[in-house]
Length: 293
Image (cartoon, rainbow, N blue to C red; front, side, top):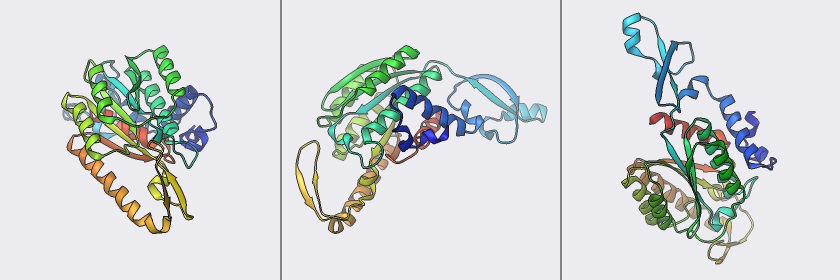
């Protein structure tokens, strides 16, 4: 099942619901068994410690009384609400490999939705470019998940991104403190991104940002002269890669580091990934986020 964590394999599967299922099952197959309880927040029972269990779950109070190691097991509760917030702007349509940034983000969002509903959590959807495209309130039912997957599967890129205005609309729509999972290339002025994320944090939401770039955007492997076009403005620029590569990569690194610093200052989890990254890396980041809760 772990082969389904590779973007080039996922590309060959037509149906989004099957993509999500295979990604999650491949992830869980490779995950250490003790991590499967990391999503949970409500205590259920004890069992004897066995080598390989996560020592964080050892109850040292029981050890002090019995001189034996026991670990806590947990059961999921349905109080967590999450939103999959997906950027559908035209820049997300770029792809040099198996999947475009949007395709990758849709697969990752679908897998996280599948994972949450199967953990009895509630998940909603918010897609946007210049304005909201679709809004689904959080629910924990499989039928609701299928509707979200249907919407994701039919999503098409287009338009520019208005990040702050859309985060403001998302914040107004969310009735309860939620986990906001944002999927975007964030190719925007840093101030606009920071303003939108600050708004979500100011009113109490937990936020995890999946910064999705194409591998070519991160590495700039181009050799021959190119005419590059901004998909959102239509502006074209003739580029000699060997002359701009060093400056481009330095500026990209500066921008990404600044994004990471801003997220850290806001206590937001920042996950930089590219479209060649196996899906387990992003899912593990989500699992760690949940475990911290």
